[in-house]
Length: 297
Image 1 (cartoon, rainbow, N blue to C red):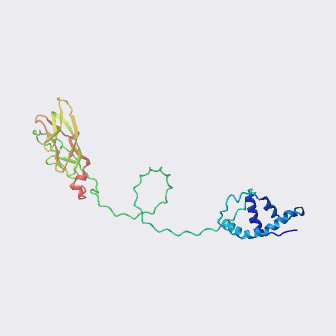
Image 2 (cartoon, one colour):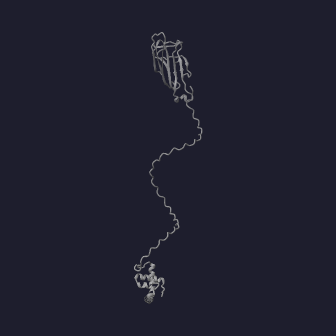
């Protein structure tokens, strides 16, 4: 004879039997009862009314414990179950929403100036750029101080047969002009007057005859050079030459002067001459008031 048992009641009773190790109740709750155990079945039938009375109380008690997950350990002392198979990996969830933007904070304080870095390596030289356009023509410059090169030169000689003695400290007047384009030499006084500042070269060539000769090259009354030639009653004339470079400024004068009256052997003839020559080597035209006006001389 088969007896139907409610699954919930069966579960509860199994827990009671398991916790109390009641072999008898476990045997009574089996779904199929063998005919060989009829006597036991009769006894179990007699206990059913009692079990039915206790069933509501047990259900309430166990349902509360199950809901609160507070089943006493002594009631759950069955053998551990076989571990379940691990579940499959779940799919990726949807991305969450963007969070709210934070509030702007006040600007921070300015930091200290950092230490300067080391100079970098020199770069490669760049390519040559294109040639630029020609610039505008500049303004014309001012006129120079001297557009014409300054000039000054002269040469003069004694007249033929002029052998009269010249007194000491007198200027020798070379009265026959060979060249005097600028008019700087005066044959009446025998003196050269400077107009162009600069360096000049003066030379004197004398023919000595019938007497010894000594003369000086003078500048503004000062002796610049002296020359002497002794005459020893030679049958033919001798010669005496000398020259010097002098720096002059406008107004300076240069001449030849006799040193001693007894040594005045200047001589001139158709065959031989005594000359006085001078010319400008180079000028100080930048400092000259004459050439600042652009005058050509």
